[in-house]
Image (cartoon, rainbow, N blue to C red; front, side, top):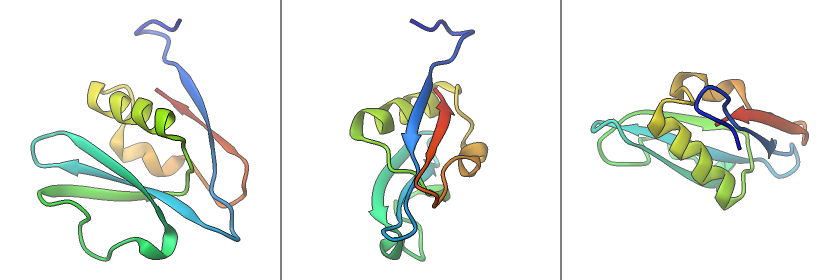
Length: 99
């Protein structure tokens, strides 16, 4: 099991160009983080959550457990909100996300 100095890495499926799905991540004004999976064409033009201070769209298709690990890593400061868009893609491959 990884320690605090050895972050765990998740192998998360990227979206596919023929059926693009994304994860919306939001940072709320109380410092907490939220996320939800949606089809690319369902991404709102306005903030998806009340009291959101930032929102990003990432072309990943995590399962529920992976998404929970990602949110926990954001809350604990092991995953940087500002770096989320470095992960994902439309190639159908995989991204390695440090959690």
